[in-house]
Image (tube, rainbow, N blue to C red):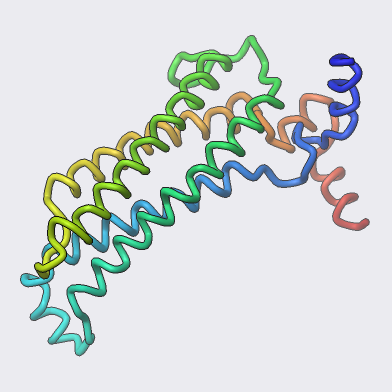
Length: 206
C-alpha cells in the first residue's frame, strides 16, 4: 500500500518535483525574512529616535517614537506566526526532494547534509523567532509599558545575530535550489534532456 501511495503521488508531481507549480517554502522564507528584518530595523530607529528627531523635523516628516515601536512589535509577532507555516512547508517539500548524490556544494557539503542542516536550522530559527516575539511582548507590555523606549539593546543585538544566522541558513537553501536542483524546474528539465525554454513556452501557451 505504501509503494502504491508513493507511485500515485509521484505521478502527480510536476517538473519541479512538487504537486504545484511554484514552491511555497521559498516564498514564505522571504516573508519571514522581511517581517523580522523590518521589526528589528524599526526598533533600532525607535531606540535612536532622540538623535534622529532633528532629521525628521528638518524633512518635515511627522514621526512619533511609539509608531516605530508599534511597527517593530507587530512585524515581530507576524514573523513568529508566519514562520510556523514557513517551516511546515519546508519540511513537506524536503520530503519530496530527490537531490543528486554525486554533487557537492560550494561549502563542501553533499545534498543530504545540506538538507539536514537546512531543516534543523529552520527549526532552531523558528524557536529563536518565537522567543524574540515573547521577549518583545514582555518589553512592550510588562517591563517598559510606562516608558517611551520599549526595547533593550540586548534584544536588538540578539536580533542582529539572528539575521546573521538567517544569512547562513538562507545560503544553504539557495544551494539546495541552485546547486542541487531541489524543486528547480529548469534544472529538472535539463537533467531529463529537455529544453526549459521550449517547455515553459508551451506551458505558457496553454
